[in-house]
Amino acid sequence: MALYLRTRYNLNPKFLSDSLVIIPTYNEKENIEKIIEVVFALPKAFDILVVDDGSPDGTAAIVKRLQQKYPDALHILERSGKLGLGTAYIAGFHWGLARDYDYFIEMDADFSHNPKDLERLYQACLDGADVAVGSRYVRGGRVENWPRDRIMLSYGASLYVRMITWMPVKDPTAGFVCYKRKVLEKINFDKIRFIGYAFQIEMKFASRRLGFKIAEVPITFTDRVEGDSKMSKNIIREAILGVMEMKWRSFFSNYVE
Image (cartoon, rainbow, N blue to C red; front, side):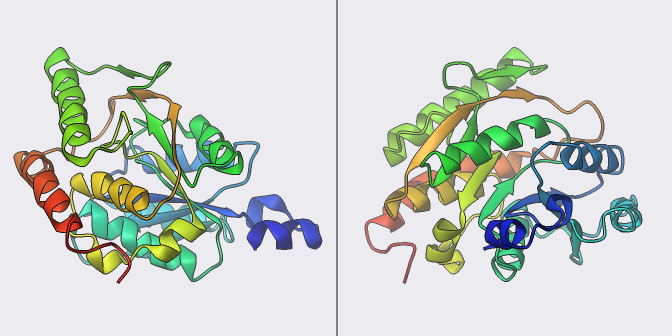
């Protein structure tokens, strides 16, 4: 719909996009302005929604200042505290679905996802995918600045998820993902149980269960340079133990009802 309006009425593409980039933040003052500017400098127009979980470092204030520069393309959703990555994305999905965006892209604020790859994920959906995954583990994908033990943990987790879920997705834990509107309209978000990084696994699993086509786009994942990692033992535990629970639940219910 947004793409139709932009074309039909010859509106400025910088301020009316068919695509919404959702960026969850908690204490990202070192990165948020830089990544917003890079996204808005891309040839293809993307709108941005920052979902900030009450960052005490002033992340939200930086975004609000930048809204004066990008009043129609930059948006912020402020929440009261750290409520989890999954709930941040779901809040962003609801916000965007109410505003007729056609494509929804999850992206980290810390430049571990290269904003220049936004256009490649978008194009993959234009070419027929319902879900486009920025993948580290397909041919052409790679990881930079990670220690060997973390690479082994991540790759091992991906193999584990694939064995349990039978999903033909080589990077099921990836967090750089583009969804077509119809995918998010069909998923019942109340059925998504995970709020940490396992949320990424469950969203792909739900999309696959509902018959949507998933494509993987090779990317280079670069570990953050500034700010603190949000990874924790609880997140890893949720991902490991939760996958078996998720698979078990899938035998008795789907993600629609």
